[in-house]
Amino acid sequence: MVQEPEERVPLVDDEGNITGNTLRSEVHNGSRLLHPVVHMHILNNNSQLLLQKRPRSKFIQPGKWDTAVGGHISFGESPAEALKKEAFEEMGLKSFAARFLRLYKWESDVEAELVYMFATFDFHQYHIHTDEIEEARFWSINEIESGMGKDLFTPNFEHEFSILKNLDVFSTSPVI
Figure 1 (spheres, rainbow, N blue to C red):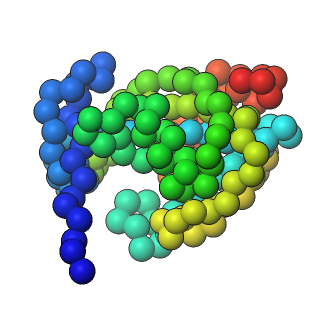
Figure 2: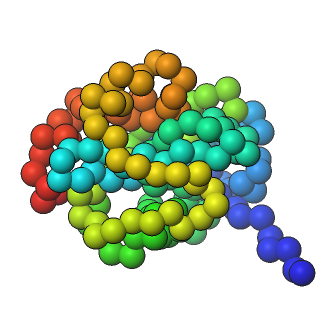
């Protein structure tokens, strides 16, 4: 069996300008090299948010609930291409319309990410399409708010949930 080469990811500045590239393993080893990722929040017509549960085998934030779609932008790939790839790989979404919400920098003890944050109401059906997700389900705003700060969600998701609320995404029309 031939092992595929490790994915290369771009290194970027705070505005997303590419400054170099490195192996994916290098950006999660505490180096805090800034690299771009995509996140997409999936909302249904009842203003519920689809979340994925990270497997307990994950190195970062195992067993916690997180944004429905998230993943690295590969070197040479645009954010739109990465979003389409990740939405299919994780949730089996083939066609959807996503709205770009915000670009922000997220830092933790082990990584630094420049997050391209999107949202969509426009999806037909999802199904977990990878073993990188333990389960997925829709959560009401009240369920999420009652779980905040209790180590149920990833810190990054909790941050993004506050952004979603400030942008008033939950009260917007499903035509997004």
